[in-house]
Amino acid sequence: MKITRISVYQLDVRLLDGGYRFAKGRLVEVADTTVVRIDTDEGLVGWGETTPLGPSYLPSYGPGVRTGTAHLAPHLLGLDPTLLGPINVVMDRELQGHSYAKSAIDVACWDILGKATGQPVHALLGGRMHESLPMYGSVSQGDPAWMAERATRFRQDGYEQIQVKVGDDPTDDVARLRAVTRDSPPSETVLADANRGWRRDEALRFALATTDLGFILEQPCDRYADNLSVRGRVPQRFKLDESLQGMDDVTVALADDAMDVACIKISKFGGLTKSRLARDVCAAAGIPMTVEDVWGCQIVTAAVGHLAISTPPVGFLNTTDLQSYNDIVLGEPSAYAVGGRLVVTDDPGLGIDPDPAVLGEPVAVFTA
Image 1: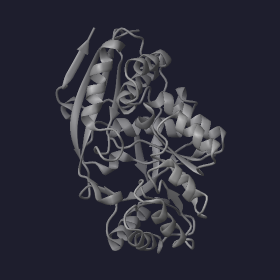
Image 2 (image 1 turned 135 degrees about the vertical axis):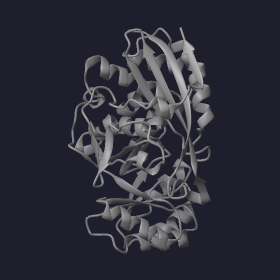
Image 3 (image 1 turned 90 degrees about the horizontal axis):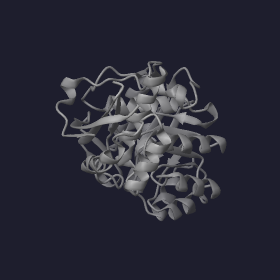
Image 4 (image 1 turned 180 degrees about the vertical axis):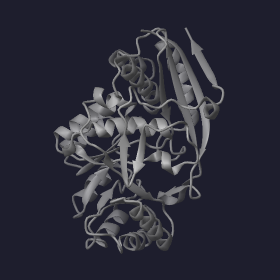
């Protein structure tokens, strides 16, 4: 089997509820989504998607996905998309770094592999480990009363895990967390996610002012050294997200005992191939994970769902249904929310075929 065509689509995806606000006043109202279609000489088609959360969250941005794809495509035409190892070797050889620009291509190749073998991608990633998956509901940053109301809506929908966006003034953030947790049932898991928004001293102020609340402190600082310092001085369980952008980061964090929970986001690692490796290493080390992506629609949610549902229970904490935060539906979802949990189908490949009317015409096409 050979890749004969790579087509690239671009969509502006509007976020619901007025946008997504997180650390230091960052607000994303419209996400720039890139969808990649890979055609083969045997008639099989694979789909991938990458959606950065604006240009200020991570060193990635929408046009960069398409620029990276344009650079990589000529080197991938004629290769076998079912051989994921060689595909990733070529991408890394031809483009140093820029993992987010490789993710959609890698995911599309996994989609083809699943279709070629008649299996869902999760069967190829290790096999189904769960019937369904617990999700967290992400409460965008706002005033405490609004955030508490948003958390209540998640609970009414069946969510048992709540993520609270902090990372602003520590005093204000304490008020936000207390408002959200005021009605938390005893079994609820709460994460306070600062998205790198605090200095070391600010993170300590927040953590020490909330020792009576049971929650997971997520990525308080930008610098890894600052996070490591804070972890050693606070009682809360500690989660790393943005500090983990590749296997080197994962192995260092494990060696330093820097985290109780890891966040594996597919596009940070460059797709399912490398995310699976990071997942398996963390699971072997007994580190539970949030398995997700930075942002996305139905294709991203499908890829996340397949990776998450094949994650051993010892290494799994939660996932999320990113497609439910957007105003666009690319196609009939193969991973979808039911009562605060994510259900993943057993259809071959990712199980999602986007609606051509929603995609529109490609912005770029590369052929052999």
